[in-house]
Image (cartoon, rainbow, N blue to C red; front, side, top):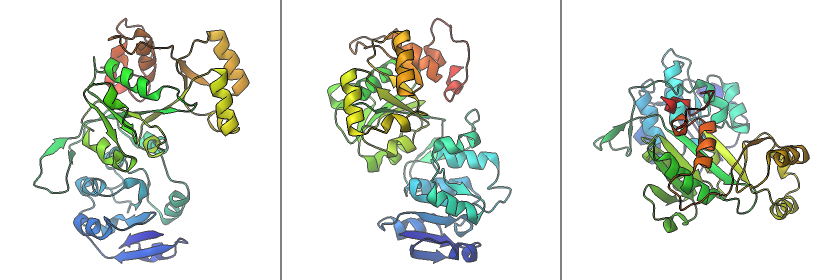
Length: 337
């Protein structure tokens, strides 16, 4: 069941063909909305932005994003100069508000086809700095921290035991030479065995708030495990395959269509000893496009040059100590300065 909070567009939203369990009409503060729905179970919240007092101030939406699950929010904007401003839209995306539209028809579309980051990335101004502050608590008396652009990278195993946990750990250590990095694992507690700082275990329900908490870092790495929420909250998702015959056959026995579904994803062969020719054969046989192959890595080493090459291809150009990268394109290129 769904909830609707409406003001200017109450009549149009009344005609939505969806099940509604609760409806509010009028203007409300963030605190009033949070208190009403913080312990209220719902599928989606359709919010007419004009129902939110002081909605033209982006900090109002920021306050809302820290208190409710933004994956459940569909935001109907009013098309005013303030809410259609590119910086306003970019800041919505920074708060992981991906489902916004300026017409009621878009609300129904987003209800049936929710956006991920990739669907709105073109509106995200990664190379600019805004005067927006993130607070870690709705209480305005709590300290605030300046918003810094943070890139969230998710590692997810496709074949069983493809190595996402160890790869997240090694990548965190490697990137920490040049960036401020935090690593998170979802719904497991394997990080405790690495004895490394800035590595935290969280539940899926805590993940969004934890990302916000550490959004002042340069990079957040996520070991997704079985979490689908982690994928939706990330700027980039790396899907790991361990390309041995036994692991691939196990995968296909469990889900014969998995490779077909993954053909457009960023596939990395992890713990891979295949030659370039073998990788070409693998791509032909599976229909997948391999983004990179990572050989077995030494997790005791303080410097994994093979991993640096992968990180440079992702866009972390400070890892290119030899200065050999030819292009600085990609979602992490802002860190190549």
